[in-house]
Length: 351
Image 1 (cartoon, rainbow, N blue to C red):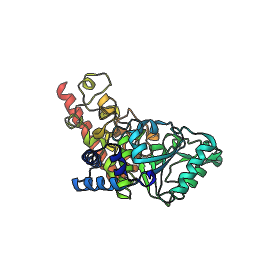
Image 2 (image 1 turned 180 degrees about the vertical axis):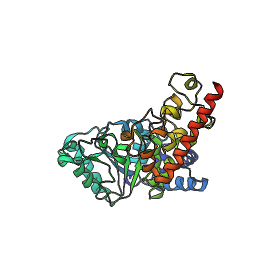
Image 3 (image 1 turned 45 degrees about the vertical axis):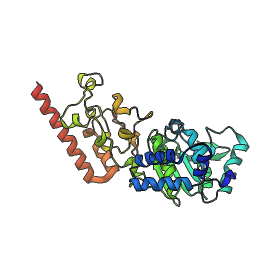
């Protein structure tokens, strides 16, 4: 019976009222910038959906992405596992090991052929036959290709899976690549971040469940609902930027007053993510709110760009090229120059 039970039926059997469920769906829809009508459609779609089989593969990674989703507060990890999805395979979270673990993956693939979702965190090493990261005697490449073959969609969780991340950084000794560099024939949702926001993960899975398709993506394969705005445009320190009020050190008067961190290397103007609005730890804070500039971790090659404490005016070329070409480079460089000019003018007045 449980195999054919819809999510709505399952929640009702667990004492969850329709009102509470619709309220939750409305919250989830709002995190994805859906209209009220679409939020209702999501509620209806989720209620009719069956539990989604998810196979989670972990490759060259630090387990930070798994740590992130275990801190999801809406829905919680327990909700995701027991109500929304059937997490049939996960290297880190499964109690089984060895042959039993691999049998679980292959059974899930066979029983849900064409319907299961593959979640991947970590990059895939290709050098020397992929020997630098293996599982159950298989290279990451072989396991990925085998598992994705009959999948409905793939979710690249974290910057390592989405773009290659730190393993791919120069000199890339293992020949690490992203999931999209290997898989060309399946829908791929990129959820970059080091780590990504848990709500981006749970929201994307819920969208797939409710509508049976991937959400609207940007040019880098990221859901626009979570990666449609840059950090700078949504940052609460933006007014200080406009007034030319910048912190020059992490412990100076400007830093204590909450001034803009642009001159300390904040990459908010060229980084697209929902950190400034969704925030972390149950919406408590995000890096800039703690007094540290954005590192740009949801953008390709963020580690190689470096300059984490160098203003964008000193490193804008390669960054802008990756996110939109010469036109954007000129626009952001202009912003940078204007900001520096305002700051110098303000300093002269104070002097």
